[in-house]
Amino acid sequence: MSRFRPPRFGLGGSHLGESPGQDGDATAVATVDAAYQAGIRFFDTSPSYGDSEVRLGTALQRRPRSEFIVSTKVAGDDARASLRASSERLGLAVDLVLAEDNASYSALDELRRDGVIKATGAVSADWRQLDRLVRNAELDCVLLAGQYSLLDQSAAPLLNRCLARGVSVIVSGVLTPQVLQADESSDPAAIRARRISAVCERYGVSLPQAALAFPSRHPAVTSVLIAASTPAEIRADAALVRQPVPAQLWRDPELERLLS
Image 1: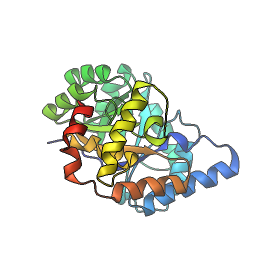
Image 2: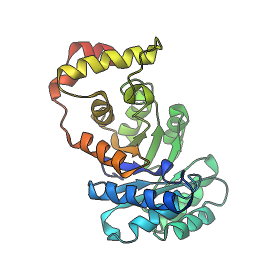
Image 3: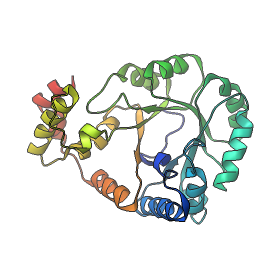
Image 4: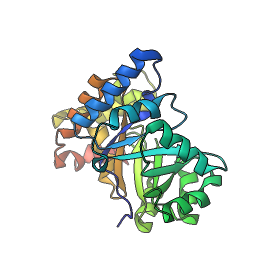
């Protein structure tokens, strides 16, 4: 059983800080509002995402604090100072802190023990790095950017280790260009995506819908982050999340071969 379980879906804040100026502020806040109205209660951000923390905090400060979870990232030796600065930008206490390097874990452990944060974790696009950390550190969760999706299950050993150790796995990057675009190229990933899409269509399921549902089929995966730039984008993705995927799809022999 995982020690810390974020909600099943969350809004990834990587795009919230991209557009400059007041228009960017308004669009980002409206995107967070749309996510909240769609039932999303987990919001991930980082100091490296431009104005994402400030904009996310502006949108969430008007919401009951007990209703949602916020995560951010730290890097470097002074994790306490980094977290303090993030909290000030957000105008909110942070629930989950994800370390981007090895230097931050002892400080994060102290913050967790002191009750300043609820949980600690690590973030990486390299599942092997996270696997080493899960073996050697007391983490509550990991955020894996890519490497576990319809088109790439290379991180399965990490997920199995996390399940055995009670570490929650948050997955991002599942809506890849191959999933979102009808790529007619001869690239192997694009060919595989088209074949998987053809199987999904027989069950009335779109490829993005299947991509959002797939990671949580592994019992270690507690959450999938969805990055969005506009209210329309997050509303469309949330609508896909609400559409059930028939269990028969996952038992389809052709799909099983394509996913193996």
